[in-house]
Image (cartoon, rainbow, N blue to C red):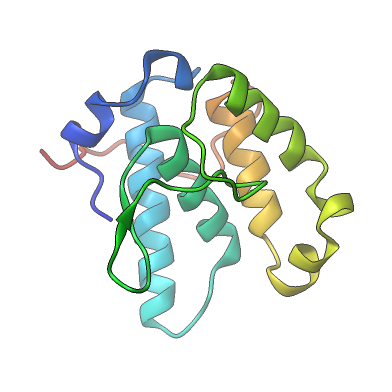
Length: 141
């Protein structure tokens, strides 16, 4: 998914505790990393966790495997629910417990839970570093 200024401008004001510009750079880097790894035949579960969390926080419409467009699911509980302050906090709390509630993810998607947690800690709680090391860059118009 291409991260554009248009997508970033539609993010609900209360959904982020970092700037939209910082969030956009991080999100674009995560999308790029996940795509590059997929092209190499590698599933980068950590980058995937970051991507799905960014898409959900942004309310970005995604395309499922059948080509149908839909709103992104919550990253930790996989529900169909829009991101808004109370829901983001609930997902953050659920993400912090994913190792206990979904040990299957820890085993079969190594890095997935960590990517979700790191993204929510940074973008929502504004605690800790960005989930990926990124250099300042422009987001596509």
